[in-house]
Amino acid sequence: MEYTTLGDTGMQVSRICLGCMSFGSSDWRDWVLDEEESLEIIERAIDLGINFFDTANMYSLGESERVLGEGLEGHHEESVVATKCFFRMREDDPNSGGLSRKAIEQELEASLDRLGMETVDLYQIHRWDYDTPIETTLGALDDAVRRGTVRYLGASSMWAHQFAGALHASDRLGLERFATMQNHYNLVYREEEREMLPLCENEGIGVIPWSPLARGYLARPHEEIDATARGESEEYLYEHPYREGGGPEINERVAELAEDEGVTMAQIALAWLLHKDWVDAPIVGTTSVEHLEQAVEALEISLSASDIEYLEEPYEPVPASGHS
Ligand SMILES: NC(=O)c1ccc[n+]([C@@H]2O[C@H](COP(=O)([O-])OP(=O)(O)OC[C@H]3O[C@@H](n4cnc5c(N)ncnc54)[C@H](OP(=O)(O)O)[C@@H]3O)[C@@H](O)[C@H]2O)c1
Image 1 (cartoon, rainbow, N blue to C red):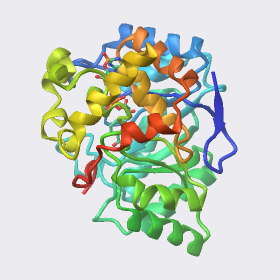
Image 2 (image 1 turned 30 degrees about the vertical axis):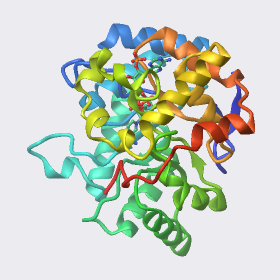
Image 3 (image 1 turned 60 degrees about the horizontal axis):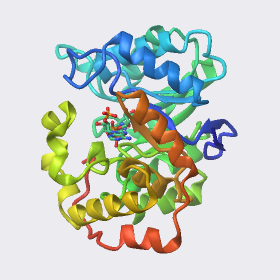
């Protein structure tokens, strides 16, 4: 396994982060693995040297965190665990979502309890909260760091001006600043290259892209997108800009290069991301041990400058996606 320093945190993380959105309970989404099968993937990830795991309170409404905590039993110290808050956890409780002090304090406590940990390595805000001043959110997050229940803070998809404002506010107020950005970035969604990624580079922010395989769109020919349970039901794959702005041609070029190199499409798509200097570790989602192994093997693929240019060439700008 290859490790890298996550932004300016000094923490060493595997260059593949295991995304845990597909672990927990099939009651939440039909493509999500229940406990036993989830544990098999987590166990294999540990064997492969993966030490970086990303979950969220809302994945399987807490079950993903519980199963991850279970899977990491005996490995908590050597793991870097990231979770998130923002989305509403209980329909009848408006304070179970958002980024108020109340929501952050209560949701963090619940997450730690499910994970079976006293401290989480990276606590991320899942989205921007338009109803809570960022100073209030930063104050509550800073207190969590001072209390020792959180080691580092992270943010997820938002506009670059919002992230720049949040970094400025924490510096102005002497509060803990966000150390990472978890954003939507892959070969068929590159809008983040305009503002967010250069901002992260300038500010020493660790970048951990979500949906690096475009939710499976880059892992098989676009004509076969509904070939899996998730492909059939994942609305994103149909409504999403992946099919616009050169998406199908990029998909075909990924397939062509994969065939030339004797590797899989998913491996080419991941290798492209791993060649981007501003990416620390893509967060890969999978329900298959074989696919997890392929992700790790992708670290060994070397793409030439002309391969990269060939993959990127058909891209055209698409509407912003992943946040509003
Ligand atoms: N912050 C946010 O707002 C946000 C949003 C979305 C996701 N995330 C995080 O990012 C993680 C990954 O996101 P994601 O699952 O949407 O995206 P992804 O990793 O781009 O795509 C996952 C899909 O690709 C397929 N796949 C993976 N490896 C493959 C391979 N080698 N061959 C063929 N198919 C392959 C998986 O199928 P199999 O299951 O069959 O392998 C699954 O359907 C999540 O677990 C979560 O931690 C965060």
